[in-house]
Length: 165
Ligand SMILES: [Zn+2]
Ligand SMILES: [Zn+2]
Image 1 (spheres, rainbow, N blue to C red):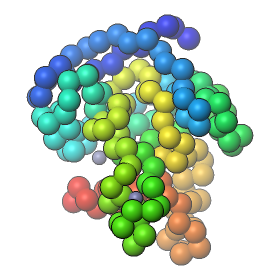
Image 2 (cartoon, protein in one colour; image 1 turned 90 degrees about the horizontal axis):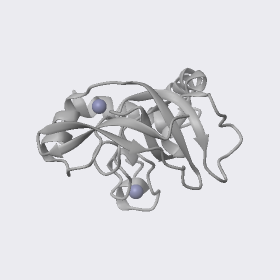
Image 3 (cartoon, protein in one colour; image 1 turned 180 degrees about the horizontal axis):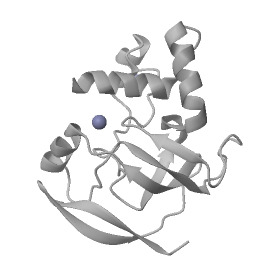
Image 4 (cartoon, rainbow, N blue to C red; image 1 turned 30 degrees about the horizontal axis):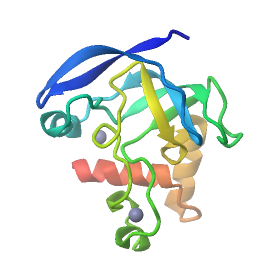
């Protein structure tokens, strides 16, 4: 792995610039992801227009796990392909969470807005809750539809898609 990665960051509201950053070590419980692709979404334009300089936009990321932080559960492996959505993990305790409206949680990081996103060769460390092996995503979606289980990531991504309609 190289020591640096390229990223498009907000230079000033409404303008992106190409920069090179040092590859970080993931924090405990987080992973580092080598980005393969990042979708471009309508919400990105708002993030770029109103974002803080230095923030990396992009919240529809597919990539492979490049490094595991300390204490990451063993379902996650180096090289595993993962998808990353908009929301960085809800708190389960705020008013919105207690009503089951996790996508409206007041305390969660928002990828590309309050934490760095996927317009980059590497993403910074991420909370695990927003990351799911792609091979499990369809299974999770079917279970969610049939009412068996709520898989949070699929749920929040679905809510997110609705929010854009
Ligand atoms: Zn989006
Ligand atoms: Zn919450």
